[in-house]
Image 1 (cartoon, rainbow, N blue to C red):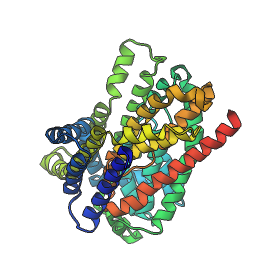
Image 2 (image 1 turned 135 degrees about the vertical axis):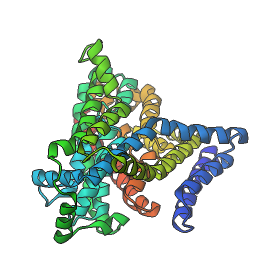
Image 3 (image 1 turned 60 degrees about the horizontal axis):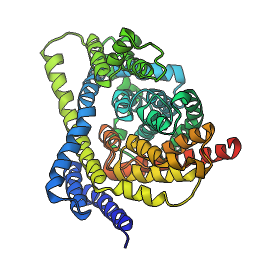
Length: 453
């Protein structure tokens, strides 16, 4: 048995234990993920003295990026829900986009938000709006969850200024061709979003989650409205969400290699405000305007409820980072990627290698960066060394980098916990949804390669 085969079996055994432990044994995901991380580390032959440190660093590393973002996003969500602002947002979206296709509205919103914002942050920011729409409409909660999750994912790995596609473009010599990458990425990702939407409709007809128990009939809706008194305006309600998104977008644009805002004080201010943690803090301050008054109930009791609900999400997200760190340290992703690189598969090679990286270690950004660096020297032999060939290679890598999201991906756990799905349902809905999106995307890219190359 080759080392690549053995490592693949170790990965499959780890994923199998996670599914069995959370679904059949009914153990808490935190415990199962932690045990899986240790088990994979030992089985893959890691130095026992390094396993604990790797788990600790992985836990702290992912939370160092997203921990406070989750907390701030949860606090904003709590305020939006308690003040009735989420209902205002839901009504506004339904009026603008129609109440016949709220799932499509959710997909489009996720698609737009994820261009400048990481999936994890985008889902946290929009989860309150999604819950309000679920409660207000008769659409399946699974449908709305998968619409939002796949909408966010569709643009996340394909369209700059998200860091992953920018890094991949840079590794493939496209730093001065980002406009072309964005143009092709927008075109390709529309099909990706549509595939996610279609899958969401199918998944919603087959599976349910705890959120499906929260639908309101008209009488309940009117009673809920009365309990809030006068609802806040649409402007005040959307500001805590839209302003952070705008700031993050401007910060990403300011960081473009062409420096559209120059390199002086304006760029520095936008770069500061565009950091997700800073943008979400501003969003939190804007959400305070929704509070009827600043007192113990609103500033302590409500905040405490929000922080408690965020604690479990943070723990599971953190231990998901631990699992990802173990998989990186064992070399599972690198070994599989190098083994697949030995086969000449044309435009499909970047996709397969990126999918191996993504599935093995969880991070789409890592898959984009690692795969682009690996295949860059091979572009001539693959017939992909023209500008368009390099752009399509970025698209193929992006397709692989979304295939698939599962237990070692922090995004998987953010979606699972915020949507109150059990792990088995998440695998059936979100993981399979990202597989559908990845296969759809590489199919579109392959067709474009036949036409454009």
